[in-house]
Amino acid sequence: MLAALMMFLGGGILSAQPSGACKLVAERTGELGCWIIAHDALGAFAEARTYWHVHTFPNRTEAEAAKGPRGTVVDSMGKVWLLTIEAQGWRPTKGERVAEIGPLPIRAGGTYSAQYMEAIFTPGMTSATHDHSGPEAWYTLEGETCLETPTGKVIGRAGGPPIVVPDGPMHLTATGTGLRRALVLILHDSAKPSSALVHDWHPKGLCKE
Image (cartoon, rainbow, N blue to C red; front, side, top):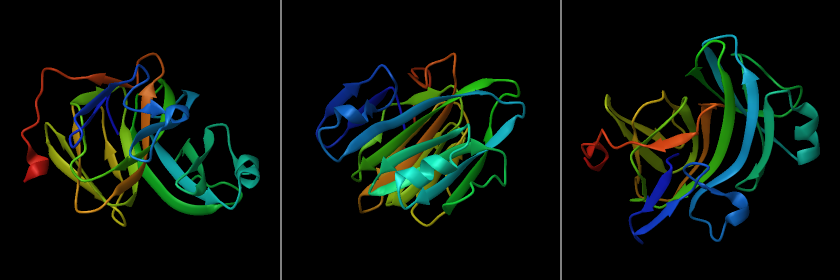
């Protein structure tokens, strides 16, 4: 989810990306990694909370037709997705509802952008210690992820509740025994980078326990 840097522990590869945690999907050279599939400015939000609505469609034409002003259509992991940031209970005119994730804590009156990513990790892959200028959330399709923050750890599993993490220091590890696949959102302050490295907090290794 992730960070300004991604460390692939098994191969020892360190990759820095100016846009944040992940490489642009156009730069993709393989399946594993974290890939930015969309980055859209959403404008100002009047309320101090919002939600991430996840829907699938049989084709891109139908998804584009159902898209609202804060919706983004992406192709990812063999499906067409409509990803939308709107108030609780929002629904498109068509499409299959997959999840409503939130609330996402934001600043009332703040202007935000949505960075969407596709993350495919093997167990043991991890992020650098980082934070975001807004909440991060992910919807796990397969596998398991552990995220450590100063307040403890949270674990996201396929079939379990989606994870929402407010801004602040964090360190992510792909755990479990199988491949982890997830759609990831960073809802960040449009005037700030989506991600930044953190040097004044260090994880305790809770995700290894």
